[in-house]
Length: 401
Image 1 (cartoon, rainbow, N blue to C red):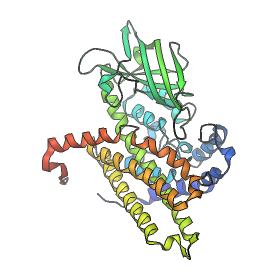
Image 2: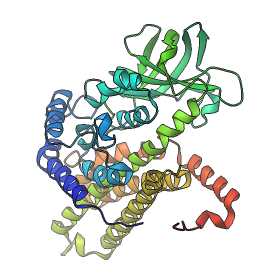
Image 3: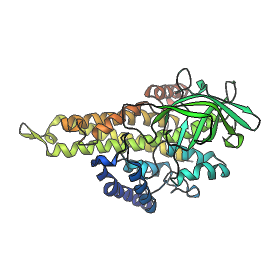
Image 4: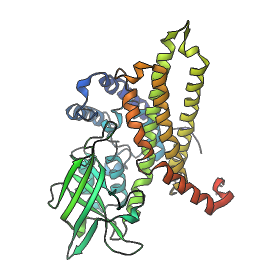
C-alpha cells in the first residue's frame, strides 16, 4: 500500500476539517443545539447541511453519477475521521448511519428506476432511511439465517408479517430496506425489499430507550401485519437478501470505524489540553509519567486503528470482500473508542464526568460500538474460522502481478 494521498484528497480533508472547526464544533457548547435525544437539533442541522452541500462537502461515499464525490473507501477513511472530530459531524455531510450504508448499497445494487425512487431523495437530503434486519429472539440477530419475518408472494406483490427491533433511525425515516424470509430453504431464503413509511400494514411499536445519545429516529421496534410490497421493489432479486446484506454491512462496518477514530482522537485532544494546564501537588498532569503512558498508549492504538481501517478500505476498493480485515478493524476500533473516552474522563477528573465537555456523551455512545454491526465475539469467531481455513496463509502478503 501507498499511504500518501493526492493533493485533491488533502484539499477535501482540509476543507472538511475547517468546516467542522468553524461551523460545527462551537455548537456543542450550546444546549440549544441539541434535540431531546442528545443529537443535533433538526432545524440547525438543516441549515448546516445546506452550507455543507453548497461548499461541495456532500455525499463523499457515492460515485458522481449518483450525486456523490466518488472518493472511494480509502478517501472516505481520510475524510470521515475528520468529520467526527465533532459529535455532530457526520450527519451534517450526509455521512451518518444508517443513511450512509443504505445509500452505498442502493448505489451498487438498485436498478436505475429504483435509484430514482429510493436513492435520490436520500442523496438530496429530503428523506431519511432505515435498514430493517434485526429481530427479537428467537428471530435473527447476528445470524440472519434465523430471521422469522415473512414476505409471502401473492400475485404481483409480497405480504409481510413479523417483527423487527433496534432499527436505527426508524422514527422519521421515509425509505426502508427490509430483510425478510421468502422461502423455507436453507439457502437463498431471504429477500431484501423496499418500502415507504406511508404504506399501510406496519407500525412502530415503540422507540427503545438506550443508554447513550441516539441517532435521529432512535432505535425502534416494528411490527408488520399485512404490509404489501410490489415485486418491482425487490432489491437485486428474490432469494438474494444475504448478498444484499453482505454488500451493505461490509463497508458500513468500516465507516463506523472511520467515524469512531475521529471521536477517539477528539477524546485524546481534550485530555491533552487539560493535562497541559491542570496542576496538582506542584506538577502538571502532562508531566506525570502515568498520564504520559495513558496518552502515549492511546496515540499508538489510534494509529493501529487507522492502519487496520485503511488496509480494509484498500481491500474493498480493489474488489476484495475483506472480511477478516473488517472484523479486525471493527473489534480494535470499537474497544479503542471506549477506552479513549474512559481514560480522557479519568484525566479530566470530575470535569470529564460533567457535561462541560463532550466526553460523557462520547462515553455513553461508545458502549454500543462493541455491539452494533456484530458483537466483538461474533467478529472473533469470524477471524477464527478464517484462521482455521487458511492456516499460515492467514498472514500472507499480496504479490503484485
